[in-house]
Image (cartoon, rainbow, N blue to C red; front, side):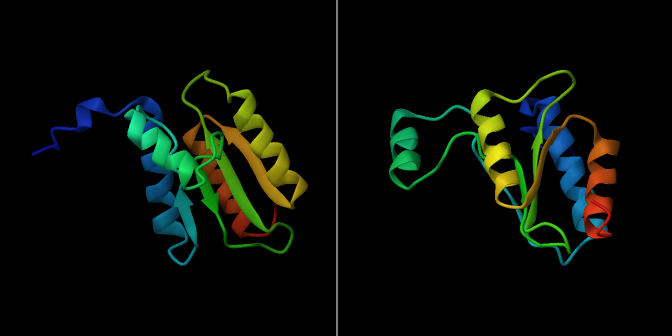
Length: 123
């Protein structure tokens, strides 16, 4: 039986879930997290997140395991033809300036190729 909440997931949610499953299966020792910045929030939740230091625009997937060239890998996932916001672009630029491989992708196969190249020290 499928979870009753599955119907509320977006295409981007499903893309990210598949990327995460791939990451878990191929690189189980990788240190990573998803940044839960999306979604609607109550006024209190918005206040609390800002109060505790949450930042808008942080990429969806942060892989903290370094490779030989980069300190980490940051991926902003977009679905189909969606593009990152200006805030998301700033985060990607700032992470790149701090020696992260930081990019936005909208295709599962592209994500897997980048992740593989990153962990093989080819990116």
